[in-house]
Image (cartoon, rainbow, N blue to C red):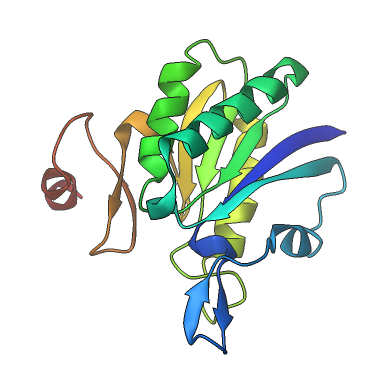
Amino acid sequence: MHIIYLITTGGTIEKEYSEQLGLVLNNTSKIGDYLKRLRLPDCQVRVTPLMNKDSLEMTPEDRAALVTEIEQLLPLRCPIIITHGTDTMVESGALIEKALPDLAVPIVLTGAMKPLGFDRSDGLQNLTESIFAARILGPGVYVVFHGRVIPVAHARKDKQRGTFVRVEPDSELVEATNAE
């Protein structure tokens, strides 16, 4: 039986519409409900809800708490998936990579451009791909999104295209967009 740990931090993937406020908010975790829809006969996904925030609201203390949670799971030698808001996903991934340079397992960050449960949401696709990727990837920190696996140092959000693209480290997104 494969065991994968999934840490939820919020982000668009977990947002829901509040009729009272007329806003899309992070109120409750929905990941567990969506995992129940998947057929994973030889895989157990253990969910750890860490926080439920838009990634633009994450503080340095929140990111430190994420690294601490990962450190506590690493001795179990199981892959780790993190659901995260897309706006600062790469920032958190880079911090994880810097804080934990000698990983023995893959750490996969994923999220969604549209919340789970919304029409044409990409959340379930990205979650499913992340589970598969976590099972086959070697040690490192990755962004898994829309059928792509990108090492975090090469990942950038392309807001125009509504996805993540691969770039050379420290290059501009414009260069990556023109190259594809």
